[in-house]
Length: 82
Image (cartoon, rainbow, N blue to C red; front, side, top):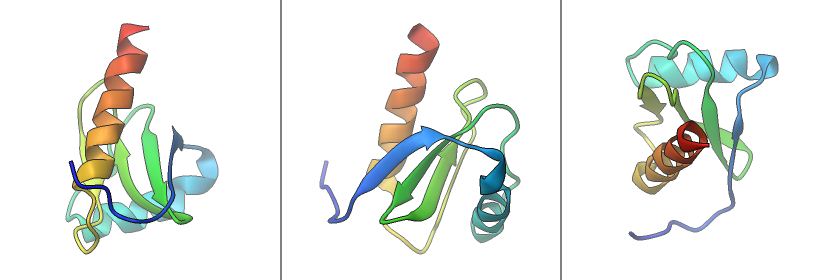
């Protein structure tokens, strides 16, 4: 896996993320996944979101997000196993 420069933070989505999630879903031509979400921020900007229960993921198609999405899936798997 090639890591793109920048700081990545993976965390639970909170209510204040709603506008950013809606924007992200629009960029990805998708709906915001339902349920609890994990989100990934790169350098302070929301670039991907993942619903561990359903497996649904949205990501910014205009940024390199493949490795971030992989991290979200891995974190979701770990949370489900716990």
